[in-house]
Amino acid sequence: MSQQTPYEKLGVTETASFEEIQAAKTRLTQQYSNDVKTVEDIEAAYDSIIMERLKLRQEGRIKVPDRIRFAERQREIPPTPPPLSLDNSPSWLQQFIDTPSSQDILWPTGIFLALALFVAFSSANSSSISVFLALGVFANIYFLNRKENKFGRALLITLAGLFIGVGLGWGIAQILQGANISAEMSQSFIGMAIFFIFWLSSSFFR
Image (cartoon, rainbow, N blue to C red; front, side):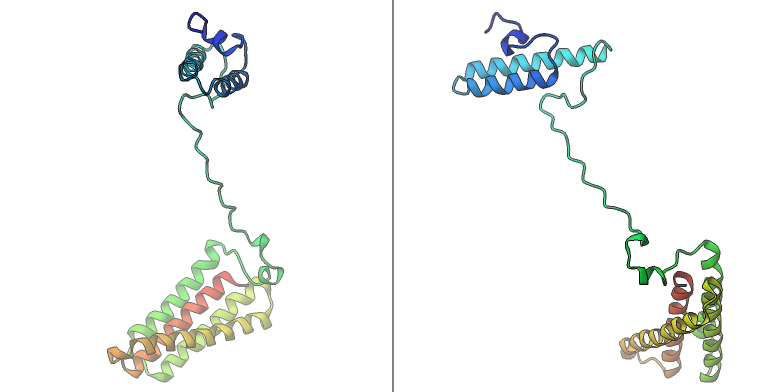
């Protein structure tokens, strides 16, 4: 086989496709698997043909598939996970979840942030905190009701957020009991937790 051209060694023509060349190389390698020298000649002929094809491709004379490489293997591209979409969520959840605009988030953020700061940094007594919480309840109902004009739903979501906020704030206060926080500080934590839940519900619920 040493006096033959690379194409003759593989038993293909110069116009053979890459698939034909690769199939011939595989077939001959298996056929002469016990003859190391012949297998090396087959590998050398295959590499020579690929080098020639790549050179011709660079010169624009032929079009060779991109997958032709010597010892390179195509890297498997990991599948891209599908983006999260509300379209695949249950219908009952889609009725409550909202995709807010920047305007829908801006106003609740400003209102509830201001109320949370009043509660956190003022030396307010219980009655004053109750006033701030009442303002937060009315604000949350207003922001929710203006989206769907369903007052009952807005009221229920607000009440649920109120109870969740109380539970969250109370839990935080219990965790920080070791810091010897005062009762007023505990009330402040509860108030801030409520306003945080109100912000979430008014921004991302409807």
